[in-house]
Image (cartoon, rainbow, N blue to C red; front, side, top):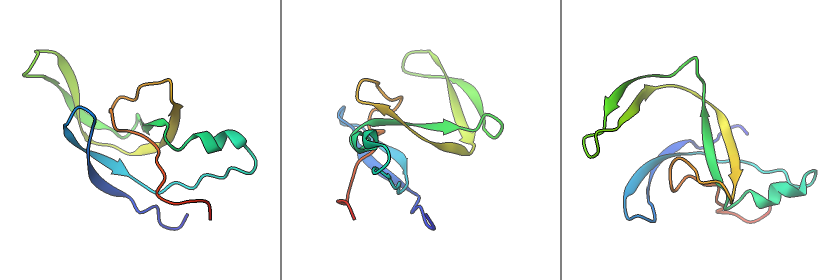
Length: 101
């Protein structure tokens, strides 16, 4: 794909909170593996390159629990998790805006 059309986009999740997600075009080739047709609508994960991320541990003010605040990093790619796995971010999913071409 020459241009993945990467963009940061706001999305309102089911809990009513608007979150900003990294979005990109993905081409699914479904002729060889029929299972690829199951990907749209499935939750997804972005895999962070462990050699590139930067950030720091912080304490969440609301509940006092620690979390890692990422400030930089690159992604290896996207991974389909399926419908039975909850993604880290509620609205993280593959979805389709186009029909088969």
